[in-house]
Length: 534
Image (cartoon, rainbow, N blue to C red; front, side, top):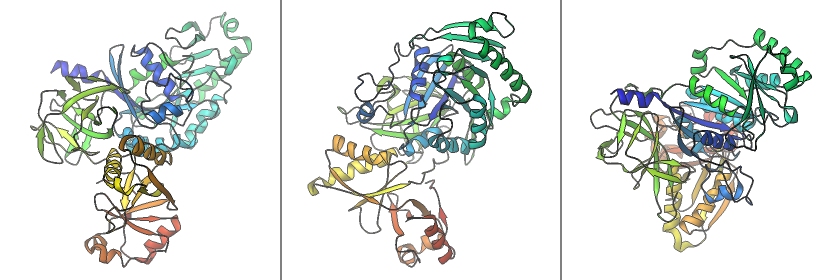
């Protein structure tokens, strides 16, 4: 039992979120570098660069130098066992990103010092707020010309509605970037660039040291002295309770590419974050230290290894310890089973494991029985975690296979990719999925779908864009009980369409917000929901 407590207490599970190009993948690699998981950090520099990032595995990611799927990586650092969930930063990301945040206990938000808060950051931030998870901010690229740090903090507070507490403070930016001031220790850590190797040349100097002006330059010294005075007098008080409830974000400045401030950030972050958090169920809270094993599936990925045509279900362990020989209960289908090929991943590299603890992310072979949101637990203590919400797609297209003889492969491919959650598929009632309507959160997913159907299922498709932008699940009992006869009586605009998802739920898709209001006004008792928790 002492072992179990110790192992769970040293776990830290967090997601890294950012807008494209803010430097999230570089920061992830530097963490792995410090943890000894890799010996060389290879920056993503587009498709001509043979050294793509360790966290990117899909061919389309290697070609474009972007992250399309969420990767899971584990490493050890100074006694901590760290699980990083590396989410796609690309602006056309998928719902996969949203769901990955459901498996994290905290989030690291990477912000470009020159650009500040960008559109994608807002979207991801909303999901973090929905779960009240702690958010730590790393303001990156201080080695380039950047905006005033006070302006950046003000923008974070205003745009995202979260208070900030700068743990360190930058000294200059761009070519003049000399390091950071640690507010707690009240000393300067000055750096020299060293081409991204692990050891950083750092000099620690007290703020009152007379030699400081010579090290960082007279102008930087004067600016820093004024800034520190202003920070000490005007900034938020540090409050760990507010951090833990996601209302105050500790902020760190640095440069992932040159390693400025990365290790101090990692060390502070690990001290401030908590071990795995309790999880809610309809029947009460599941304590991570409960010895009985429980987990939920938040991601399914097919064909990670093309040679094996495999399918991996990723689960977040919520309580107890997993042992490879144990029998577990798959709550949704009521069967006990042994989990096949339990493994932890370093991007596409896998390691079969014999045990794992609460807080860990584990992949298991899925013969096609698991769905996103499923609960796996010890048969001795049955629990069922709350479903993961299905987020509303924002882009729609009609697709069909070019070769009518490949109907079977087309259905298999679209169904499997939909089960992973990268796309959602719908059909018009009674059409029997002859033509499929695909909904995605980001338009890049259409390209990924086309690419994967061709490369993994040998199916070429014809895609026709649709004008719909909003989707709503029909939840009013009156309409659902009356079935299709009742639904066909709905008074809707000519450009509103009734569709069904793969579970048979009825939905409406609209071209504008105005059409949603029209439908609700003209059909008393009609109830619509923005997302589905099936």
